[in-house]
Length: 76
Image (cartoon, rainbow, N blue to C red; front, side, top):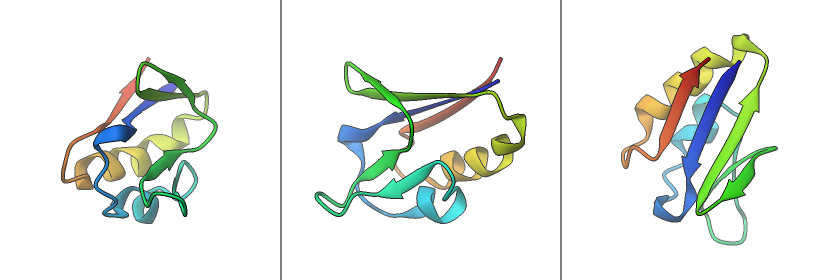
């Protein structure tokens, strides 16, 4: 299982996450910030638990490309 976390309020809207991992990230048309699809929010952190290990490579690329380092990816 892969756990992806996004701290959305610190997003600067660079669009790298949605470029590298369009399956899990989109850019909001309302405020231009990243949206972690199918995630649950708790205290400003959006978390997605994905049982598909195949999504890890794209999520890792998105996390590494993020200039403000607000995306984390963990495998459990």
